[in-house]
Length: 501
Ligand code: GLA
Image (tube, rainbow, N blue to C red; front, top):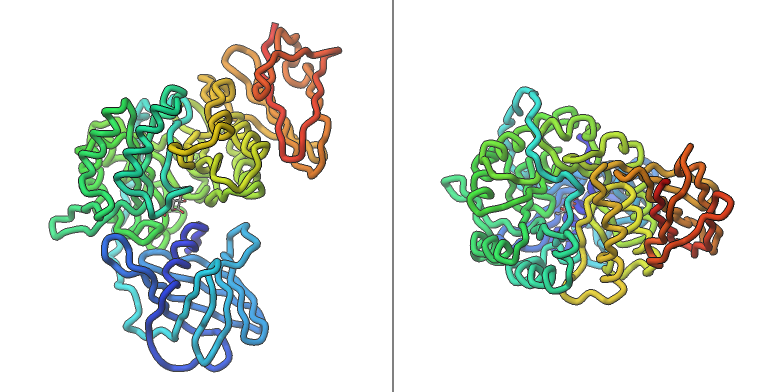
C-alpha cells in the first residue's frame, strides 16, 4: 500500500493534538505501535491515529494510520529525540518532532503538541469488507470541461473551516469582484462538509452546512456552478465519511442537490485497493455520475498515481491530479508544475492534467512569484481554481487572477499543454495556440535578475512574427532581428503572446 498525500499527514497530525491510550512502556526503542487521539470532527466523531514504527539504529520506518488512511513514513532517532517525515513527500521539514519520554511519544506537529502512548488491540480500526471494483470498460465523454475548469475551491485557505456562510459570501464576491465574469464559474466545497451516514445509507451534512440544497440553489442563483468532494474510500483525507460502498447513492444525492462538479479524492481507498485498481475504482463513480444524467465535472484526485493520464478520460474524468498537494511556497509550486510536464501529450479538450489548485493571494509568495504561478498554470493548460479569500483579495491579487490575457492562454480552445526547456536558471515554456501563434513564458528560477531572450525561429519555425504582446505589462513589444529580450527578476516571469504572419 503506497500512499502519498501531504494533507493526510496534516490531517493525521491534527489528530495528534490530543491524546489517549494505554499502558506498557516500550523501552528506549521507538519500535512498536503507538496510539494518539485527536480532535473532534465537525460531525462529532473523534480522530485517532496509530503509528506503526520500526527503529533500526537511528533510522525509523513505518506507517501512520488514521480513520481510513495510511501514510508511509521515514525518520531519524538521536538519543530519545525523533523526527518523522512522509516517506514519499518532497517536504524537507519533518511533520512530527518529539522525544521518547517515560514510554510515551511527546512532541509537536508543526507547533501543535501531541502525545502518543503504546497502542492496545482495542485501539485498532474496524476491518472493512472488501468490495471488488467493476470490470473495466470505457465510459463516454460527458461533454464538459472543453477548456480547463475555472473557479474557486475552499481547501487551500479555509481547509476544515469552510461553512455555508463562507461559501455564500465567496459566491457573492466571485460575482462582485469580476471573477465570475472572467470565467471562474465553479464554487467548489472541498472536504469537511460531511456529517454521519444513517441507517438508510444517507450521508448527511454536518452542522457547518445546515441545508446543502438551499446552498446549491443560492450559488446557482448567482449564475455560478457548485462543486463538492468525496473519496472512493471509507473516509476522506480529513477523516470524514466517504463514498466506499455508497457510490451510486452519493452520486444520486449530489445530483438531486444540483451539484455540478465532484472532486473525488483517493485518500483512504489506498487502504483497500492497490494502485493498479485505481482505474476500476474511479470508473465506479464515473458510472454512478453518468447514471444520474446530470452533467457533473469529474475531478480525479489521486496525486498522479497509477498512470492516471493514460486512463483518466476512460473513466469519465475531466481532470486528474498529477502531483501531491501544493503548498503556498515557491518550491512547491515549481515542483508541481514541472512534475506534470511529461503528461503534456495527455491534456486536451475535456481532459486535463491538474497540478493542484492556485495559491495566488494566500500570502506566502511574492507578487512576482504569484505572477509566475498564474503564467505557468496557463501555459500548462491547468485548471484555474483560485484558493484564496475572494472577499478580501488585494488589488495585486486581483490583477493576477483577473489577467484576462493570461486567462485566454489557459482557456485557448486548442488545449495544448506547454513543455519546459531549461537553460541555466531560465526555463522557457511554449504553448501553441488555436490562431497559429504561441504563448511563451520564461521563468527565472535563479536568485538574481537575468535576461531572457526568445527567438522567433524557436517559437514559430518557418513563420514570421506578426505581433507580440507582453501579457503582464499589457503592452505590445517588438521582435528585433528575430528575437525579443527582457530582464526578468528572480522568480519572475516574462510572458508573451506571439502571433504569426
Ligand atoms: C487531499 C487533497 C487536497 C484536499 C484534502 C482534503 O489532501 O489532495 O486537495 O482535498 O485532501 O482533505
